[in-house]
Image 1 (cartoon, rainbow, N blue to C red):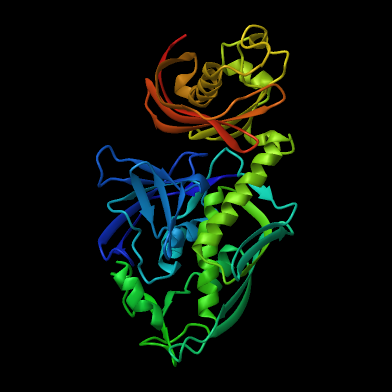
Image 2: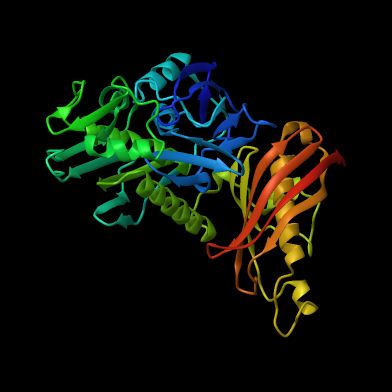
Length: 433
């Protein structure tokens, strides 16, 4: 079952890259909401969810962004939560960067462990790699292979010598993820940088909070001003980063991962491929329905009936935060008889209606909304990006932006075969039925 922390945990420290003093408070959260960061230093306290679709490419760090709000260097905290099986948490943060602490994840891990965790009533999303998933960029690569009921990682670190400024590094670490293994073998591994990279990183405005206490600087004769905790500490830290990035997939991953020379950019590409593979399974009906709804359950929540019910199956429900549904578009749809019958195209307004219906499912699942109707109030930021025709399978996704007792605000989109065909933001008023 999904877990959240039992009591709040507070951290204070300096951002490794920004150099700013940051405070974060990790609080319990409802099942299905995932790990979300609340930027309390910004107006309206925007929320950024740690999820694959929010990951953005940034140099030397993981970044998640939603609209104008972003949070970066979050990978060590996310790795600690993932290792502890904490699925849901609300992280209040008063800046853009998670504090670096000791440059590793041990402080995050131990404080979260000591706070304890509690089970919720929702099942934990589990996903197993069934076919190899491969990503590559130059000499760097990651392959995810079918696992044996758990997550195992094999990391190959290989840095060539650099003009006398670095002797080169070759390390191999194999790791099986359990809380104890993570605390003992991975969490203490610190952030590192090669000596010849320092000037370029500083010129790019990075590493302002780096100190000998939180960052290993690897020179020709090994680390400056530090002693390695393991001979292969660099490879262990790469595994730490990889686990933190994988946490953005939002699933308990069953896989064996072999990574060679990879970093955050390739980790992000792997997460995207995992999400795409999971989507294909859902669309083909291979995914279990324990986190979704069949048509009978949908009819209990929505007042819509034929010919105006535009959802066939809900394949994923993450609490009250996110929902995914499927609509199979056939030539027998009644609207095709009068809407361009010689060249049948699904009306864009009906795609918006399908989004609204799924949003209704998401909002009306809350106990306090029992017996209410979600009445569409406004539609904003609408973009129609492609035609939907008979034979297509419409994948509808909605994500909660804000949910209050009488108002719901969601971001929605529809896709066909992985291609975005429509998107919008919808607001609802919740009224008594």
